[in-house]
Image (tube, rainbow over all chains, first blue to last red; front, side, top):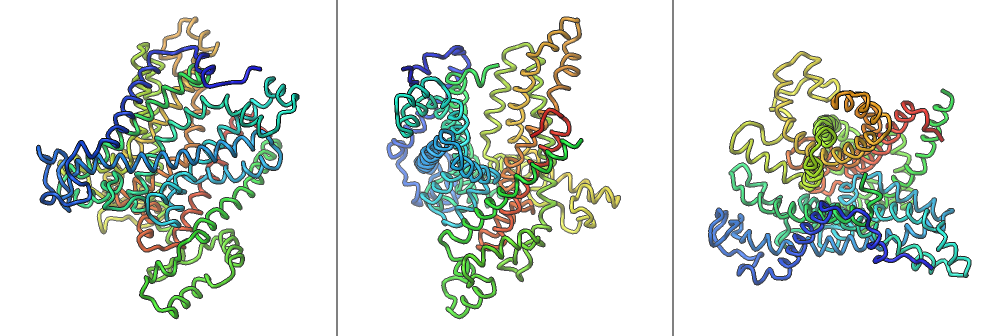
Length: 287
Length: 337
């Protein structure tokens, strides 16, 4: 009878500490601002991020608050439009890894047996690559581009969801309400999706938020290494790389801004993830 | 110690299927996914004859399964094939040239990360103020959120370009490199009594190691915070406090001592994170290690070298994890199969 649901999980929160709340508010505030920036970018700047609009390598000024790069592109509009690219790739890839990882994890944890052994072996092997290294390998094979970068990042983070869901599913399938469902003759698919999965939602949400942080950094890393998004598409990672060439000449604005943007976004998702983890899974994160 | 031997043997046997899957994954990704290495190396202007010759030279004209088994056989006999550019050196030689640089960076960064992480973690236990705990959590979040190349570049611009305190890139000044014994400049220069080389190597190593160390320290701080507070909640700590021991003594003798071994183990298990970090740190600082080698060879599409480094990275992670497990089993007799 007592199927889990997201709202019942929320109502079971025991220690909604002020700190966790503040983390969630701060994190979601920044995330919403960044999403708004991505949507409203054309209204926030008059310059096309992929057009030369002024002299090359101009320092920050009132007209160009973040200066211009070696091609005379306005760095302010590149910083703003960069939000679109990173959010697009990161949400595409993490959603994909979440769906695949959660489904495989459910199958593995729920059925056990040879399916579990094979899947666990493959996932553990993928886990033994540093995530950036696996992403590099796949991007080399696929070539640069927005969708290829998203695919590479998606593959890399499937084991993250798989491990967590498998572990949880192993314990949940032994719970009475699942046994009751099985006795009433529910099919395996129904048991997995309608009995086990809902009680995993809080954990999945938390892992997803923290995973977005890693995905942002990996996306930036791929573009920084020349394997992800390539110029002239505005991307912080590739802007950092093109700006680094001019570092010895002291053009600090070319390298400072893209990194600050990356950091704002990763901190936002970390705060959100840590806060959610306190609120949704108090057992795990509170001593 | 028979049971420990059984543990070690079982642990090693369990790794064989995993190694096979790891090697197969690399092969699948590099060889089977679309993208023609020969076309990439020779460029679109090469004649069909030239392409065919190179294909033959690299053994790419053989059926896929033959390539697969010769690749597997090669890895187990220590033959990773030949580089596709620059005189086609053996990939093992290329890796051997660069491995010490990566090792040196990884060791120094993890020392810096462990010091910072333990300091932040113990601060949360020693300080009674709730702000300390909030501070430690924020430290973890912020330091982990640094994009490694960016942190490196920021240090470069302030300390190298503006203040001229450190070199901007490289491992040692040209001509200063000590005679190669281990390939670790810090050790080689000490053994050969070459203080100038030692100082120069330290001077070059500091910023890259600091960059990676700070980023990893966030994870270490989080680990120390949890394990310190777990131990601090145990009865023997309460007993020690009720005997009137000073807080510092309780921390050093009752908390730190009990938490340290599991903690160092958990830090060691972050090895993959550390290794991934070296790729980005090396690229940002032109540090001539294996990560920078990948970066250089991406430009030339030198698939063989890249494949070799990928295999090498995965092997390192697998074996470091095994060694840590075995050490831990040795220290803690409760851990057995």
